[in-house]
Length: 138
Image (cartoon, rainbow, N blue to C red; front, side, top):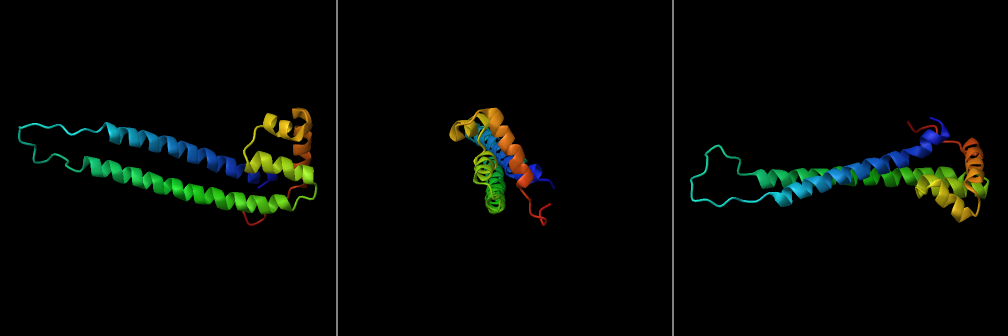
């Protein structure tokens, strides 16, 4: 795994979490739209009486998946931070931290560093050359 692939893992996990949160929002919307129909007609004996409970269980399962992904993201960022700290040049570390740990856009990185975007690209390119990803990560 090269430096950019290693550093991009957190961004990929973050995107997965956002996707799962969107799905959770859809599930919650569906549950809140579920209404009970009140009628004096006898119900069907095969009718599923647990629809609301099933929907709530799906929400809980989705929340557990999201929690696991968040834990994975925190662990990934912690390992990445330790690896970034091994880069000797402080300017390189700053670019790597902002881009891969804080998920800042290139324009935001350039604004913070008071450089133009093209110069930040050059710094980033050199930072990636000096970054050595851990060998035990797949």
